[in-house]
Length: 241
Image (cartoon, rainbow, N blue to C red; front, side, top):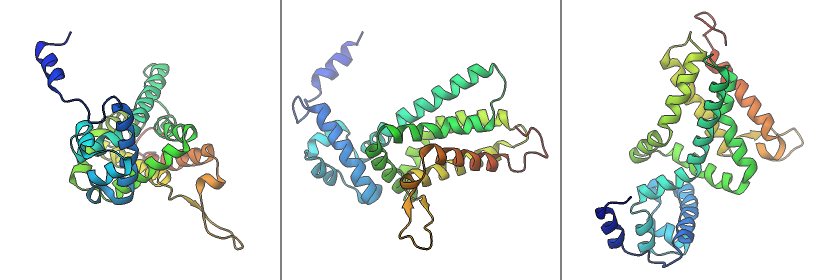
């Protein structure tokens, strides 16, 4: 039950400038933010550019988000949030089925990577927009964005590193954390559209991986590559799981 202070705050908050179209305007602003952040990065983007692309007012953007930092956070969370929820749910289910036994490294890595490919299969357009933002954010990370990445991805890193540590007892925590960061780097490289197939002698330009390779093929090759890296050097110290 809301407190009297909460009720007063709700009544004192001004109505959105766009009247009854608040949810629609908010989505337009987020769509436009994906485009502007992808094109210009965080430092180069402005609230005015986003509002112009969205066909909305600056006052509407301020009402819904309040700052450029908050707008970027919401832009990323709209895509990252559901992915992270699926990752955690998948890992929880796998660990419950394992009944206390460490999971296979391949199983953990696939639980982290597969939701990206499921999202791509569900909405190619949305994936294309998000991958542009992800690539730009990772290539041009000012301090505020670095802090935001820790906020958005910190719990996922902690959760998956813990599961990998159980699966690779011969590896130090530092080795596993570094290996997981390299895994994220491979993932960003792929989803940002930088993965291309090598052309033959009579072919033209390289093609994006989506033009020639199936999602499942790319996923399985990524899993095999990442697992080999995570396991490297662990055989002499402990489990070869």
